[in-house]
Length: 256
Figure (tube, rainbow, N blue to C red):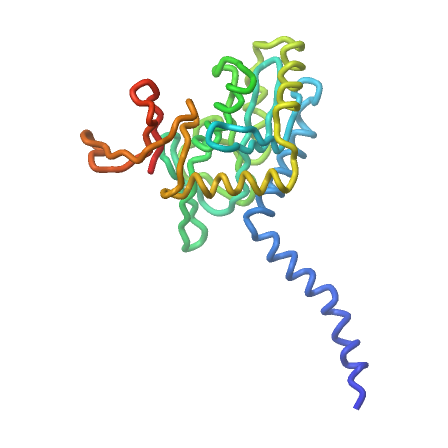
């Protein structure tokens, strides 16, 4: 019996159904979701931020004493430097400025993720070192895209959708000249890592190494080794943390 007509009959709908299923699974992966969120922020910036006033760079990887740091978006203007971290998340979001971790509640499931303000702080410090600018002219901005709802009061620089535009435009006093802006852009262009897969893989490896409690670490401030120490007094007595081996000259500490 010839089954060819039956196969052909079912192959036509399968020919679009299978790629659709693959696409849906891909869209749920953190890497793809993050990239789509960054593209959406680029689109908002294209629509609402004058490119001549707010000079933009995306996906910047910079060297740091303990590896690399990757920055989603940087907008350089005479009004300051705006460092934007994108979060493409759904559900309810709980958090405060000082909490190490925030909470995402999605249906009946609960997830913890790093406070994005703390995550962005490292980006600001890397830019401060690279550009040699005053820290007060660097501004941290977080934007959540996706179907998320804040369930706690958020700081003004934690926004949703395109509302980061309003926050950036709230700074209207010039602190740099156009020559300063051009020089900083040139410094970033020459100092950034090439935007290649190899750079991304190395950055991911650095992240894994930094999250491994058994791996050697370097102080992000002075480059000396970080050592596991134990708090001897206070509210955190008995808890372990990473402390710089150059203490007391360098007082860098990281949560264990």
